[in-house]
Image 1: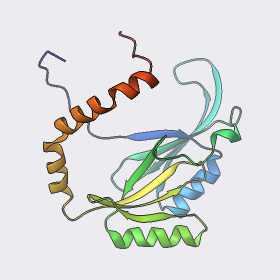
Image 2 (image 1 turned 30 degrees about the vertical axis):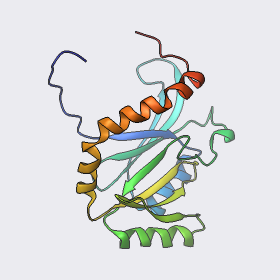
Image 3 (image 1 turned 120 degrees about the horizontal axis):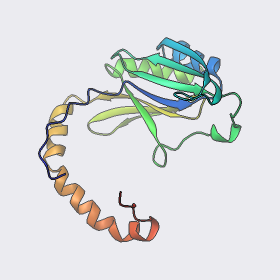
Image 4 (image 1 turned 135 degrees about the vertical axis):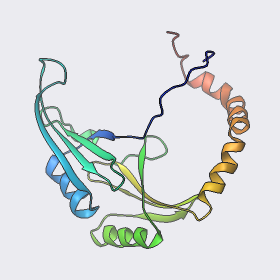
Length: 185
């Protein structure tokens, strides 16, 4: 990026969408267990923007900040082998922010009381987190910011370019062996 341009600000994530095993089961977990508000259940018959038949339900659950986590229920193509517990280090996870440690403890107790295994709390320095899986195998995290969160992030930001350059140099050889080059556009 050599030209100096002013880009509009990205305001945040409106929603992230994932596959679910079953719309009702997912609704029960996100509303009844986690206390989120269901804002939309869209029953759709065509792939968006096409005339291709595709029957699915698109669910939206709202968080307190106005952002959403969403799911697709695709009954005609669903496969059990997709719904294993995801590994947060190899795949992905979702970190939902809570107000304080007392709120985190309420959720930890609630989840464990419902038979949902919970790992943590784990103090990461800038946040403290608990981890668990939803019925779809998605790893979820409830995180609480440390008291000095902003100062920690400012410190990390100040050294991020140097840290990233060192990491890139240290891992370049192993990545060259394991990954194909990205095709130029």
